[in-house]
Length: 257
View (cartoon, rainbow, N blue to C red):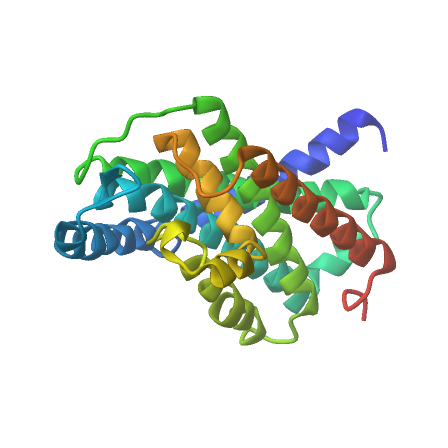
């Protein structure tokens, strides 16, 4: 395929992905705004008033970056896993795989679709958070880069989940039993300084720790891990997820029947 044909193929997949989640915005965008509002009220206002300051900021300010990242992670992941598995379930992905479209274009289309939903939800949740507290960006470059890297990483993770899923129940197993625990143990609601040394070291195996703390540094200027370590770990996980996703597409494993 020529570069122009590849561009058309990429934009076609991307346009389909964006139209899909915008068409059902009450299921894809609205729930995040409602859920995060409840988190802000319960954890930020009610519980936060009793906890006091954390990391030199009010508890509400401290948890908002983590909650924004939680919305980005879950939406980037769920968009790709549900969309690609739907294509696999109705066998339309087989037509895509036998077409001249390069596999990396197919993967890019789905991943960028998940990234756009993650970014849109991030904007919505950020606007909602401004009704509860004030946010001052410490480093906008770090914020933008971490958001993009995180969205790409978990969009790829959603793709891998979709490839291995055999039914619609399987696409909820990873978010329920893996993703949710990693999010809640990733420092969204607490500082790592509160943990005993052993558990603080164990927590550093959790990729969400680096995601949440890097984003919190970009917003507030505080982090429990070094920024270089955060970028390095997220970049490493993203590279592994990308090459493994390409391997699954190139081999057609669990895709061609």
